[in-house]
Length: 159
Image (cartoon, rainbow, N blue to C red; front, side, top):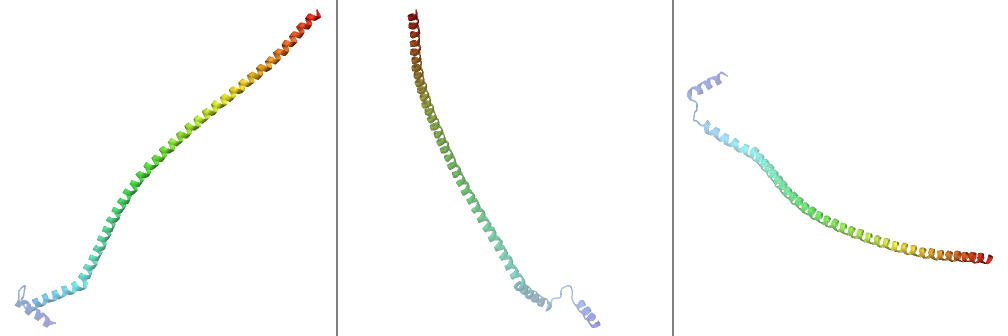
């Protein structure tokens, strides 16, 4: 162990901060070999995985943008269809109201005609009953007149 200390003391005295000898190029070559090995074994696969992940994320973002555009287009299409359906429903409602109004006015007219017919029928019936009552009254008047005449004539003959 003392030999090592002595050897270290000898080398320390001979050089300064940087000794340029065969160890410097050897260290540079070792560093380059280590960098190449690390690059081949660690950095390239890691870079490849990072690039694949970035590609996957970018693909997902592109797909999401496309889906968003499709959803917006679909929403606009549905809005257009909804506006058309609302117009159609308003047209149908207007037609139904017109038909209902027509039916109501037809029924009102029919009811008025029925009322007029009933009134006419009642008027005719009243007139027939009046004539019948007048003829019955005439018969009673004739009968009473006859009775009166008989009584008057019978009273004169009795005198």
